[in-house]
Length: 474
Image 1: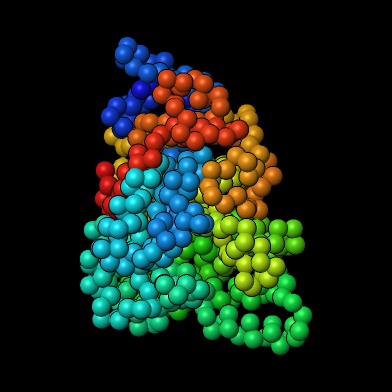
Image 2: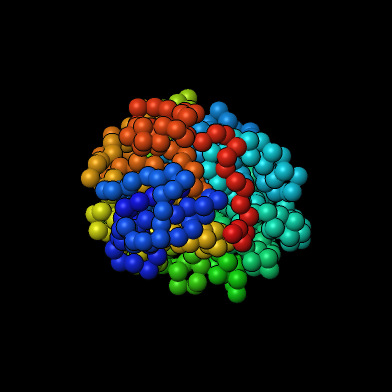
């Protein structure tokens, strides 16, 4: 296949270059200046991408696709379809929201057997470290899973009976074990003691009044994130560079992590919304940690641009209406189905709004995650010999994020109705079109069969196309 006349976002470049891209056997074969000699269309499928931009396929390294075990919320077919709609070509799925949790090779095998037949895009897994493990057993669990996972996930506070939080001894053991095998240790960083004290104070003040969204926000203050990161770094000690803090919503927590050599991520919802938006969106905006103040939102954008926050993820975690809309902010399910929105949002409000340079945009949507999770040799940038994972964008069109155009099982999102600059025309994984807009589907009518469709576009690939990736993938 040859993509002609496309404005490509290439590594090391400050601006787009108009090029022709040749793809062979799922890899980028060559990238030439547009119209240069040496590239023939003979016997090749050719797509004229005049007027379009090409970006590396986004990598979303924090999704909960809930399969097996919680498929009333999401599954890999719908989750990967939604990711593809949003320009994502690789996801990394969490170990805690599937049954059994991925804490053994046997559990991984069971999950992989199911997921492999349903994934539309490429995927990897994390292993899990939880409070049910003895500290002395954790090194063996890590050694067993390390060849097949790209990191390990843990919690300091957890609402899941099947995946309890770790204590200090367990976390310290995990940090050393992960360093030994060279894998990141991911942490949901909220301190349970800070949260317990906040909830106690709120209960005393509230009396008999029903809890409000302001109560939920106040019950998980920014101090809970800061205290948890400080504790984690102390426990990790010399292994701090292997620590990765997920879904940072507090500026100081990111600074503390970066100063000790740890990495961290934020999510699109922390950049797009703040505490004042709970009045409008209620349960649709509930996550843990919650979004913070307008000041924190602005600081997160600054830190992302400066590199103190390494990349952005979706923390994709949808749920059905009956779990989200409980009329109680404290019991409503916390999560947003965000894998289809994080790239379009960053494209519009990061790159096109000039909050992020082109180089930084590429890092926070693809390159940073590829490096952190051992996928850089095959993913994360548009260069020859890497997988032909790319997204075609029309910069002159806009996108309105509507539930009707989502493929995920849940469409409860605070991004609904948001108008963004840029429009995804196609998402390609290893050279094959996985998602095509209505316009691109017409151009690719011989190859786009329409496995799933809506008013915005079509899923072109078949379930099972996605490839299982492990550390060092080429």
